[in-house]
Length: 426
Image (cartoon, rainbow, N blue to C red; front, side):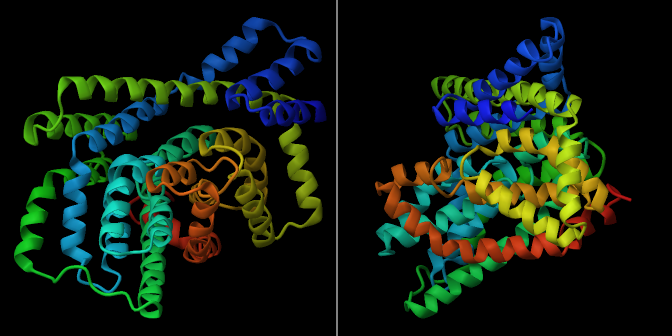
């Protein structure tokens, strides 16, 4: 079975899409080694995407795209400025708070970086902030997108690990707050060290006006989380409700979206959804091959023969995920690794909801770094910086992100307390 991984890695390094590398290496094994009939292979791939929770994927993508195209991000940003612009290093704090709010709508780090990032970096540069500092805080805050619900990676992880997506969504709220606090503390440190000033005086009137303008957009996370908490929606239905609400805001309330824009948003959503589902289908076949050949169990036994200490295992898995996150996009990483890692989690008693948040945060950090970090490339283009300068700008922000990862990894109750309290976990 070593040939499966060798072929996968070799094909991946040639620059072909991830789903081709996954499907190609799997088909090599099924056709030329195991001689499995074609209809079985097609059935496994189709079965991988024949899932009700996966219906949430296109609708969360659509909701994020609609929010960006309808100008809703501007209202969120204006409210964040009124809320936190009076603090030292004000626009850096605004950057983080804006991402917290937008995270409750988009579900992806790339949507956050591309949507709010364009506004935030320009505003910070106009107020005299260093370009590298602006890019760094924007990159770090974008990682909040998939941690604070809704979250596209949580949907994929929940399906692959057979875990409640509602529990994962609730489990991400407090870790998202922890990340926000650490990032804002780091901004405070930088503001003191570099003598940053305040960008806007605090005015209750301004806060009230911007809050009223942003209320319809702020209702989106309330609809999603509140609906699931009270049992009104499944996560899939919540995604549909979020998309419908974003459409109402863009077309009827704010009247900022034309039919031409809506068509473009729809096409972008279809393209992104197709790429995600292709990866999931190919990864389902890959995971099935790993399961039928008992590779996952062998990997678990090999690791447990070294140590059965759950904390050491968590450290080793974190290191693995941080490296893999630099080379593979999160959806592909989750689809490939969950079948391999799940037997290990079960044997050492690591809660899969807790691990889902840990895994997602690791992979979000990977999005910030070469060679394939998508947030890195997006922000490099927005800020008109080279990849090298963008990478160096992001490096200091690993301090609050790694501090958050340590807390979330080794204090499981940070993740598990809320879903347990609300009855999503026993």
